[in-house]
Each structure stands twice: as structure tokens, then as C-alpha cells.
Amino acid sequence: MLNVLDKIGDWNPQLFREIKGRLKVFNVVIVVGISLLSQLVLFLYQLREIPGQKYQLLGEYCGLRSSYQKQQDLIQREVNKFNDLLYAAKSAKPVDKVKITDIEGQLELARNKSEDLFKFLSKNYCPPEQIHMQEWWLDHWKYIFMTLSVVFVFVLLIAGTYLLINNLAQEERKGTLNFLRLTPQTESEILLGKILGVPILIYLLVFLALPLHFFSGVSANIAKSHIFSFYSILGGSCFFFFSAALLFGLVCRWLNGFQPWLGSGSILLFLVITLQMASSGYSASLNYASAWLELLSPFQMVNHLFPRVLSSSVNSNVLKMNFFYLPIGKNLITLVGLQLLQFGMWSYWIWEALKRSFRNQNVAILSKTQSYGFIACSQVLTWGFTLQYYDRNYCPRYEDKLCTYDLNYQIAQNLPIIIAFNLILLFGLLAILSPHRQTVQDWERYRHQNISPNHKSGNKSFLTDLLRGEKSPAIMAMAVNLVIVAIPVAIWMLIAPSLNFHQNPANWIQKIDKMRGVLAIVMCISLMLIYTMVAQMVLLMKNSRRTLWAIGIVSSLVILPPIILSMVGMNPREHSFVWMLTSFPFYYVDAYSTPVMLFALSCQILVLALLHLQLSRTIKFLGESATKALLRV
Image 1 (cartoon, rainbow, N blue to C red):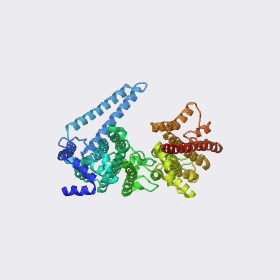
Image 2: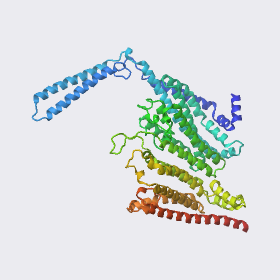
Image 3: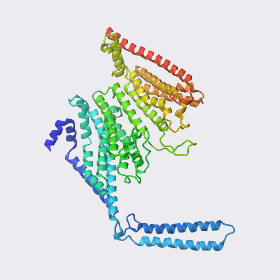
Image 4: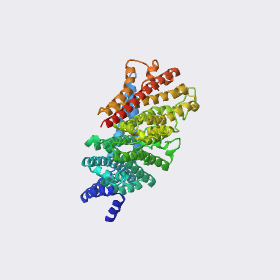
């Protein structure tokens, strides 16, 4: 045992530190006792329902159930029939009393049959040889397997997340986290040691239940490949959520003691919602842009890997799932591979942010260069789930046949999701990449030292600094990210007319010509750059609460104008020019005229130029004032 710990210490000293502090004898005994006792209680709880000598004839596992069920249904239908006849006879005019008396007699006989059958079923029990014990044991193991699967997900993700965030908060308060930052260990070694070591008792709790879980799955005739696929997905989800928990713990230190509760509570809410969707048999078809968010929950894949276990019906939505038209859902390897690839992609960017923010808490969690890759990956994921083959029960009225797969309709339906998701990403990057007053001041003072005396190379270096520099304003970087987001939408708008295979006149995209579509995209980009410049100018203020001011001002510019225009009754179709200057220039774009759009775009560019001029003067003043202050000293 000591040799194993020594090897762990040589490989990852942080993991050795966490294990040494948590694997105490008392803690291990408590965890082992809880795990074994819980498994025993679960097994006995299911065993209490085992069919015995007094098993009902209408019991689920009784072989005579179907025959008695048919008799019960026939008698009940007979009772219902005579009730209807009696009601009709009493409602008829004139009333035939003889007929009513006859029907009442027949109804009484039917009710007597029902009562006799009920007494017979309550006094007699299913013969032992007619009880399907093999089927009962099959369902018994299936319930144990599924219960343990759900418990594994909740215990690992919620308890593990809470422990990791709480551990970071405690180390931050004690000052030991700063000591770890000074050690020669890399960020990856320290953080990986925390992921593997902090929830070590939770891992032990689950590990002791794995034999029962695997045995119950095999006994329930569940394929071993599906069981191991569940283990791989559970491991991938743990790594993703635990990495996100560490990043949340490092970034949101100001939440103090509320931090671990908020992090684990958010994951609990997410898991409860997705579990309800899976267990109820309802799951929105996975042919929409944000399907990746639903797939972040292991329960969606549990419902697919173990059909008719978590819900009463097979989840065919996963089977039909495509990714860029590739039939991912039809093959277990590709489906699990896509799930793990998604966990890996998000985990990669989280770890890039972790490695940057662990050593220096004041630096942006993503650099400008990393933001380009992050935005590009998010677009690939979003558009990959958008572009899928699926049947659609819609046809133009003049066609009799069933139309399937209209690409323009499909993208148009997902466009609001794509826009909302990209706006969240872009505003998030705006908050992350925009430097504050002191950072911009330092950049303006010393940037000339990194520029070559040669004029041409100097311009190139200055542009490179704007695109990749850590301290330069984020205007150029946001412009690049906006172009990356806009390229797929622009390509679709340009080729949309050639994709209208069914000649659907009701498709709104056909009412927009290419020129207006491209102009709407350019207007959105210019408007976002205006918000970026406004936010950057506010962040250059001397006010200590400039971050809150920036959030408030930008939010007001985005939200208030459409609300005010709606309150005063200005219709977008009648006052298109005014609406094009708000945060929704693409609203009713099919009703706008090209000259009006060009004029509105010119106004936006003029505002953008004035803001850029003012921002340049402010930055130059910051650099000059700092230099003069140094000279005076």
C-alpha cells in the first residue's frame, strides 16, 4: 500500500495530498458501511414484492392474468352497454316501462357477474406453477440496475461538484491555494489531482456498488456493450462537470459560502429536469440546434442505452439523430463517440480557461486567439445538430403527397435558437475580453516598444497586437468573432433560393433577396461593435463600479429601445427605419427596402466611426497622462 502511495506521490503530489487527507480509517469505514448497507436495503426492498402463495390472479406475473382480465373487460363492457341502453330508454318519449324493466333486469345480472368475479379474484390466488418467476427476476434486476444508475449520476455529479467547489473556497480562505500556485507543479497536475482526490470517498462509495450494478445489468439481459457505454459516458460527464466546477470556483470567488450550494444546486436542477423528460417518455426531438445541451445530461443516453427501463417507450429520437447529415444515432459506437467528443470539446476549453485563471486571477479566462477557436467550435456543434434529415408533416396546399426534409424550413425553425445562443456567447466574450482602465493604460504606454521601426512591419505588429494581444482593446477581436458567427448564416441566405426543393411559397426566407439578407447581417455586426465600443469606453472610467455600469448601459441599449417603440405603438413594418437602429435590425427584414437598409447601415457606421474616434482619444489620453505623471516625479 505504501509503495502504491509513493508512486501516486511521484506521479501527482497534489493527488497524494488529497488522498492522505481524506482516506482516514474512520471515513473509509463509514463510506464502506453506507455503500454496503444501501445495496442491501435496495435488494431487500425489491425482494419484498416477490410473488408468494397469495399472489393475485390479476398480478403482472401470473400466467392466468390475461384470461381473467378478458373476462373482467367483457363483463364491464356488458355493464356499460346496458347502462347506455337504460339511459336511452329513459330519455325516449313516450317512456316504455316494460323495456326499461327488462333492461334493468339484464343490468342487474351483469352487475352480479361482476361482483361474483370480483369475489372469486379476491378469494383465490395464482397457482405457483402459473407464476412467471423468471420474468419477475428479470424485472427485479432491471429495477436494481436502473436505480443504481440514477443514484450514480446524482451522487457523483452533485456531491462531487459540491466538494470540489467547497474545497477551492476553503483553500482560498486559508491561503493554501496561493501556496499551491508557487509550487513547481503545473496547473494541470494540481487541478487533475483535485478532480481525482477531493471526491475520493464518493468514488469509493460508487466503486463498491459497481459489482452489484454490473451483475444486475447482466442478469436483466442488458448488453455488456451498453453497460460499458454507460460507464464511459458517466466518466466523461464527471470530468466535464468537475472541470466546470473548478472553473466556477476560481472565477466566482465573490460568492463566498454560497458558491458550492449554487454550483451543485444548478446541476441538481438540470439533472432533475432531464430525468423528468426521460422518465416520462417525453423528449424533444433531437433535430434542433441546442440538442447538445440536452445531451450533456447522462439521462438522455441512459434512456437510449436501456430502453423500456427508464421510461415506458423506446426513445426513437436518439436513433434518428444526425450530425451534419451523418446518421450518428444508428450506431452505438458513433453515438457514444459523439457524446464523448462533445464532453471532450467543452472540457478542453474549460481547461484552457482553468490554466489561465489558476496562476493569475486577474487575466481573462480566454485569450483573444482562444476565443476564435472557441466560437468556431461552438458554431460547428450548433450547426451540426441543425443540419439533420428528418420527416416533416407539412406540405403546400396544392400538393397531395407528403413532403419530407425541407432544408430552408429546418434552418429557419432553428434560427432563433442559433441567434439566442450566439448572442449569449458574444456578450459573454465581450465581458471576458474587454480590458479595464489600468490594463489599457499599460498597453498604450508600452505598446510602442513592441512595434518595429519599419513602417510596414510596425503596422502589421500593431494589427497583430489588436487581434492577439492580452491588454489591447477587444474591438478587433470581437469583429473577428462576429464574422465567424455570421459566415454560416450568410452562406445559407445566399444559397437559400437554390435549396427550395419543394417550391414552398410560405417559406419566409424566399421573400428576402440576397442583398437585404447580407445587409441585415452586416447591420447586426456593426450594432454589436457599437455595444462593444460603448462597453470598452465605460470600462475606461475611473469609477470603481465601472463593470456594473458597463453591464447596465449595454443592457439598456439592447432592451429599452424595442420596449419603448412597442409601447408607443411604432410598428416595425410602418417604421422600419427606426426599428433597424435598435437591437433587432433583422426583425421583419422581408418588409424593408434596400435603400432604407443602406441608409440605416450608413447611420450605424457613422456612429461606429464617432465612437472609435472618441475611444482612440481616450486611450491616447490615458497613455499620455501616465507618461507625464512619471516625468513629473
